[in-house]
Length: 149
Image (cartoon, rainbow, N blue to C red; front, top):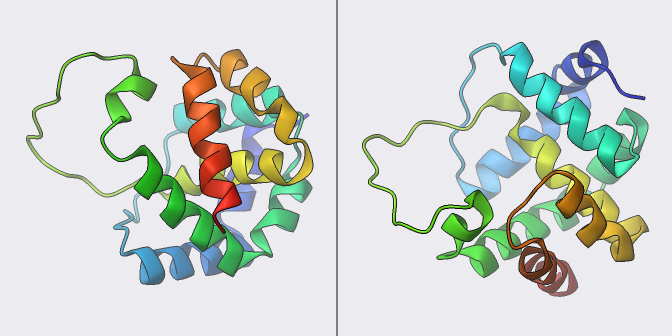
Protein backbone atom coordinates (compact mmCIF):
# COMPACT_ATOMS: atom_id res chain seq x y z
CA UNK A 1 0.00 0.00 0.00
CA UNK A 2 1.22 3.43 -0.95
CA UNK A 3 0.81 6.38 1.44
CA UNK A 4 1.00 10.17 1.15
CA UNK A 5 4.55 10.35 2.54
CA UNK A 6 5.78 7.89 -0.10
CA UNK A 7 4.12 9.83 -2.93
CA UNK A 8 5.54 13.10 -1.64
CA UNK A 9 9.01 11.57 -1.45
CA UNK A 10 8.57 10.16 -4.97
CA UNK A 11 7.66 13.51 -6.57
CA UNK A 12 10.64 15.11 -4.84
CA UNK A 13 13.05 12.41 -6.05
CA UNK A 14 15.78 13.05 -8.59
CA UNK A 15 14.34 10.41 -10.93
CA UNK A 16 10.87 12.00 -10.98
CA UNK A 17 12.33 15.46 -11.50
CA UNK A 18 14.53 14.26 -14.37
CA UNK A 19 11.45 12.79 -16.04
CA UNK A 20 9.56 16.02 -15.37
CA UNK A 21 12.35 18.08 -16.96
CA UNK A 22 12.29 15.86 -20.05
CA UNK A 23 8.51 16.08 -20.36
CA UNK A 24 8.58 19.85 -19.95
CA UNK A 25 11.34 20.16 -22.54
CA UNK A 26 9.95 17.71 -25.08
CA UNK A 27 6.26 18.53 -24.80
CA UNK A 28 6.37 22.13 -23.59
CA UNK A 29 4.21 21.59 -20.50
CA UNK A 30 4.23 24.32 -17.90
CA UNK A 31 4.54 23.00 -14.35
CA UNK A 32 4.28 25.06 -11.19
CA UNK A 33 6.89 24.98 -8.45
CA UNK A 34 4.37 25.29 -5.62
CA UNK A 35 4.11 22.64 -2.93
CA UNK A 36 1.52 20.02 -3.91
CA UNK A 37 -1.52 20.04 -1.62
CA UNK A 38 -1.97 16.94 0.50
CA UNK A 39 -5.44 16.33 -0.96
CA UNK A 40 -3.90 15.93 -4.42
CA UNK A 41 -1.34 13.49 -3.03
CA UNK A 42 -4.21 11.52 -1.46
CA UNK A 43 -5.83 11.25 -4.89
CA UNK A 44 -2.55 9.85 -6.24
CA UNK A 45 -2.43 7.37 -3.34
CA UNK A 46 -5.97 6.21 -4.09
CA UNK A 47 -5.20 5.77 -7.79
CA UNK A 48 -1.98 3.86 -7.15
CA UNK A 49 -3.69 1.60 -4.64
CA UNK A 50 -6.65 1.05 -7.00
CA UNK A 51 -4.17 0.07 -9.71
CA UNK A 52 -2.26 -2.21 -7.33
CA UNK A 53 0.95 -0.34 -8.09
CA UNK A 54 3.80 0.72 -5.84
CA UNK A 55 6.22 3.61 -6.09
CA UNK A 56 8.76 1.03 -7.25
CA UNK A 57 6.48 0.11 -10.16
CA UNK A 58 6.21 3.77 -11.17
CA UNK A 59 9.97 4.15 -10.82
CA UNK A 60 10.57 1.22 -13.16
CA UNK A 61 8.24 2.73 -15.77
CA UNK A 62 9.80 6.16 -15.29
CA UNK A 63 13.16 4.72 -16.41
CA UNK A 64 11.65 4.44 -19.89
CA UNK A 65 11.72 8.21 -20.33
CA UNK A 66 11.70 8.47 -24.11
CA UNK A 67 8.94 5.89 -24.52
CA UNK A 68 6.90 7.62 -21.79
CA UNK A 69 7.24 11.01 -23.53
CA UNK A 70 6.11 9.45 -26.80
CA UNK A 71 3.12 7.90 -25.00
CA UNK A 72 2.16 11.25 -23.44
CA UNK A 73 2.41 13.02 -26.76
CA UNK A 74 0.31 10.36 -28.48
CA UNK A 75 -2.21 10.35 -25.63
CA UNK A 76 -2.79 14.09 -25.74
CA UNK A 77 -3.09 13.91 -29.52
CA UNK A 78 -5.65 11.07 -29.40
CA UNK A 79 -7.84 12.52 -26.64
CA UNK A 80 -7.77 16.08 -27.99
CA UNK A 81 -11.31 17.32 -28.29
CA UNK A 82 -12.81 14.69 -25.99
CA UNK A 83 -11.62 16.12 -22.66
CA UNK A 84 -15.16 16.84 -21.47
CA UNK A 85 -16.04 13.16 -21.82
CA UNK A 86 -13.38 12.15 -19.27
CA UNK A 87 -14.44 14.94 -16.92
CA UNK A 88 -18.09 13.96 -17.12
CA UNK A 89 -19.24 17.32 -18.47
CA UNK A 90 -21.25 17.78 -21.60
CA UNK A 91 -20.73 21.46 -22.19
CA UNK A 92 -17.66 23.25 -23.48
CA UNK A 93 -15.65 24.94 -20.76
CA UNK A 94 -14.93 28.64 -20.85
CA UNK A 95 -11.21 29.09 -20.20
CA UNK A 96 -10.59 32.08 -17.95
CA UNK A 97 -6.93 31.47 -17.28
CA UNK A 98 -4.59 28.62 -18.11
CA UNK A 99 -2.58 27.63 -15.04
CA UNK A 100 0.47 25.36 -14.95
CA UNK A 101 0.17 21.70 -14.01
CA UNK A 102 0.80 20.68 -10.43
CA UNK A 103 4.12 18.92 -9.93
CA UNK A 104 2.46 15.55 -9.27
CA UNK A 105 0.59 15.45 -12.59
CA UNK A 106 2.88 12.79 -14.07
CA UNK A 107 1.67 10.20 -11.55
CA UNK A 108 -1.68 9.70 -13.27
CA UNK A 109 0.01 9.20 -16.63
CA UNK A 110 2.68 6.92 -15.15
CA UNK A 111 -0.04 4.75 -13.60
CA UNK A 112 -1.76 4.37 -16.97
CA UNK A 113 1.58 3.75 -18.68
CA UNK A 114 2.47 1.04 -16.13
CA UNK A 115 -0.88 -0.68 -16.53
CA UNK A 116 -0.57 -0.61 -20.31
CA UNK A 117 2.91 -2.14 -20.02
CA UNK A 118 2.18 -4.83 -17.47
CA UNK A 119 -1.52 -5.66 -17.50
CA UNK A 120 -3.40 -3.87 -20.30
CA UNK A 121 -6.54 -5.98 -19.79
CA UNK A 122 -6.86 -4.40 -16.32
CA UNK A 123 -6.98 -0.83 -17.68
CA UNK A 124 -10.75 -0.59 -18.05
CA UNK A 125 -11.31 -2.10 -14.59
CA UNK A 126 -8.91 0.46 -13.12
CA UNK A 127 -10.57 3.37 -14.92
CA UNK A 128 -13.99 2.27 -13.67
CA UNK A 129 -12.63 1.90 -10.13
CA UNK A 130 -11.48 5.54 -10.12
CA UNK A 131 -14.82 6.56 -11.65
CA UNK A 132 -13.74 7.84 -15.04
CA UNK A 133 -16.84 8.54 -17.17
CA UNK A 134 -16.92 6.69 -20.48
CA UNK A 135 -14.10 4.49 -19.20
CA UNK A 136 -14.44 1.99 -22.05
CA UNK A 137 -13.89 4.68 -24.69
CA UNK A 138 -11.08 6.29 -22.68
CA UNK A 139 -9.38 2.89 -22.26
CA UNK A 140 -9.55 2.38 -26.04
CA UNK A 141 -8.00 5.83 -26.57
CA UNK A 142 -5.17 5.03 -24.14
CA UNK A 143 -4.51 1.66 -25.77
CA UNK A 144 -4.42 3.34 -29.18
CA UNK A 145 -1.94 5.91 -27.85
CA UNK A 146 0.22 3.21 -26.33
CA UNK A 147 0.22 1.06 -29.47
CA UNK A 148 1.39 4.00 -31.56
CA UNK A 149 4.73 4.32 -29.76
